[in-house]
Image 1 (cartoon, helix red, strand yellow):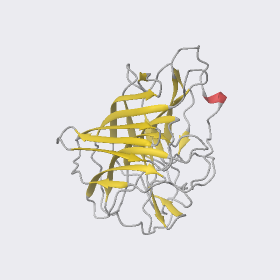
Image 2 (cartoon, rainbow, N blue to C red):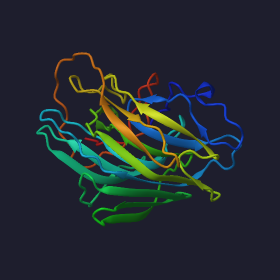
Image 3 (cartoon, helix red, strand yellow):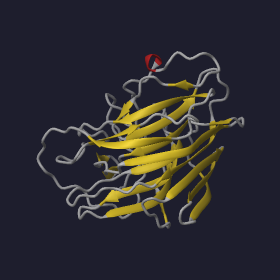
Length: 303
């Protein structure tokens, strides 16, 4: 089971003082080594804190794949997994990876952590507009993802072994690769340029629906900043190019934003061989926060 998370900048000092009833946006962005995007979590005294549904759309980015530089990236919407005590995470999304030969590979997946990820038989191209949604009722979850460009879609109802509905997320992630249950290595983030999220919404169990920033919850922009030190029971492979994923400001309606990839400064390291590109989708895990303890990721390929 994943270990407890420790946030570096989260806490009372990180949240803006906000009048009762006004939408809250965290003033200081937490910094993660594997998540970049926005997270909504319930405000104290703002009614039921359980989320019932999360939805959003994004344009599948085209990855830049220089030969000899494998890279990996995932884009998803989900529920749960944000709290330090969380043991579950529900996600649906897409992946954009680069092989060592400089070829791009795109895939669609969903995952009900702690269960393994499921790769979907949907052909995906860069530039396709994707719409995803997760609905939870008890441990019964409905997963839906549509490729609005090609017309392909997938929907299923599953029973999750564990469920977490305390937060809603819209995320770009650097996945990890695992050999066995605990030997994990964060993979280099592929150069996806910019990914644009839109139509982002969340709904609570009592029927309230709103965008990312809403009076019923607090929205936090989480910055992915990778210094090459790795995070998930291992290190980013030596010689790999470190990269950041930085969420930009919310739209006027608070339902859209973009995440920008940028190369990070990394001290010279001796070269090493990266694992081969996956044959099955790797699913994202919970955020590993700078300054926190080293954790086993939940989005992984187990060997």
